[in-house]
Image 1 (tube, one colour):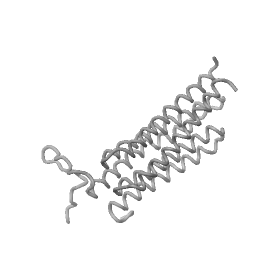
Image 2 (tube, rainbow over the protein chains, first blue to last red):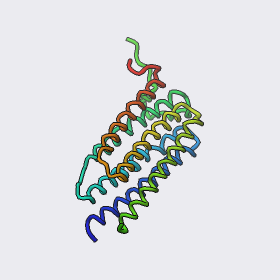
Image 3 (spheres, rainbow over the protein chains, first blue to last red):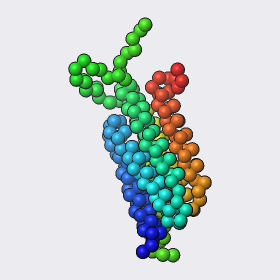
Image 4 (cartoon, rainbow over the protein chains, first blue to last red):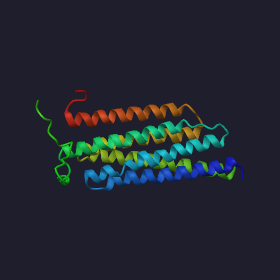
Length: 120
Length: 95
């Protein structure tokens, strides 16, 4: 068994794992019944699902003897931007009143997204 | 065709079908809503699914150009998602 064969098998396995996570995330987006729980499911699509597809692409190019690591760039970009957009979704849900009241933070702390800016 | 190449072909077909199903299901969520946040979330998921479709197509055809396409779609999708969420939040994008 040569290294090319192993790379092809690994690429097929990563493709299947990525497809599984994508379908799980999208079913979660469709079937959950509250906005905040719906926000949680599709983050798997963005990180593990697409990450596995890009790893499969890298493995295929290594198996053909012309290795490329460009795909790591896209993975890094997706991993840095996914939390930012998820934070924006949560803010939209909170400020449009589509979720229950937030739990009170301990001590004299407060939710920064709900704080009124001081007039000066 | 060797056994490994046949398996890769089957996996590619499964991934393509899964991504297409994902597009359809997030489109259903985009239509039924019910809140604005859900609609933006469904749009973002559709952009990411389109990204995956381009990646799988690139593997299937063995073309390297699809890498740049993927990067561009990722950047455009992030920027448009943030702009849309910001517009819903503040009624303004750049204050």
